[in-house]
Image 1: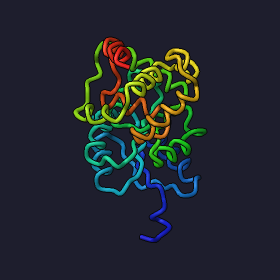
Image 2: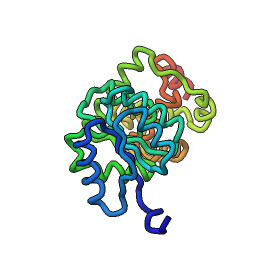
Image 3: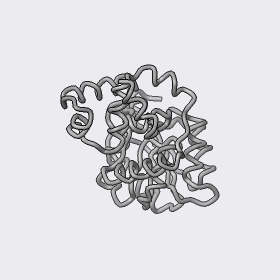
Image 4: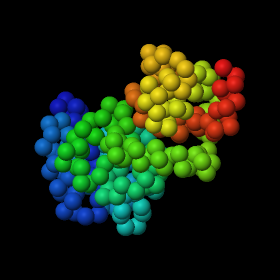
Length: 239
C-alpha cells in the first residue's frame, strides 16, 4: 500500500438503500484524506466486511433487513473493537440513541444533518472523541436518567478499579454533570468555587482518559460509575 493510502481514513458505509450509499460515498470522498473502502446492504454483510477489510470507521444505518443496526454494532464492536462506529439514521428516538451508544457506537448522526456534520463526525471519532449533536446529547441524557431511575444500568466488572481513581468529591461532580448541571450550578450545589469545579473536572478527564464532558458521562455509564440517589447521599456524608 502506498504511504498516501495509509494516511486515509478508511470507511465502510452500511445502508440497504443503494442510492443513499452512493450519495454518502460521494459526500465522504469530497473530503481529502477520506475513502470509502466498502459498502454493505445488510447487518450480516457489514459484519463480514468490517472484519475482513481494514476499516477505521463504520457508518451504520439503524434500519436494515435481516439484522437491526444495534445488533450489527454490537457484533462489529466485539469482532473489531478498534473500528469506530457511527450510527446513521433518520430517527432521533432517545431509546435508539442510548442503545446505539451503549452497544459500542462512538457517535450518532441524523441523515438530515449528514451534509453539514458527516466530515466533522468522522474526524472526531477517529480522534477518539464521542460525536453527539447537541439535540441528540440532550435526548441521550434524558434517556439515561429514565433508565437510571428504573435501575437499568448494570455495574461493569471494572467498576471498583476505576472508582479507586476518583475521589469522593470527583464522583459527586461527575454525578452532577450527568444531570446536565453547568459548572456554575455544580459549584453552587457543592458550595465550592467554579475554579475548583473545573479542576475536579480536569482530574476526572485525566483519570478516565476522556476529552470532554460527553465522553466522561458515557464512560461512567459503561463502567457503572454513576451512583444511585441513595449511594450519592452516603458518599456526600463521607466527604
